Length: 157
Image (cartoon, rainbow, N blue to C red; front, side, top):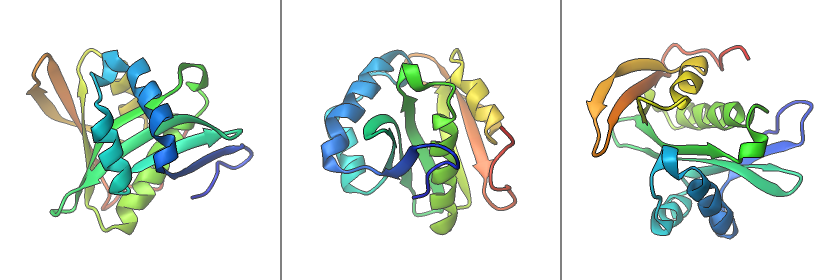
């Protein structure tokens, strides 16, 4: 996978040696992601459905997802180390996810985000549009969608 121009950031598929660090990042974002079980992360890696962001040989973020048979790609979780936020790591993960979704013939990317999180602004700024609100187990969730049929490469940064 390509690195960001002018940066040492690399986005690549996750491997099993990434699991411990991905779990640490997920645990640091428990408020946003909830409790993420290790087996769920392991399964995403086994299925080749996780990307990681690496800078200076250090894993600093991840996104995991699943492609459904109906052509929808569901983004489950995205998280970046706190000290690396604001450095376009999340954008790079989303851009690479969009490229994968397009290459696999997906029609859209869908995700759910608790209504009270600032992450909703991130999704809106990066090409997702509101698709409704649903009741989650503990709180209401915004549903976000990105159509891949007519979407340009990425939003302006």
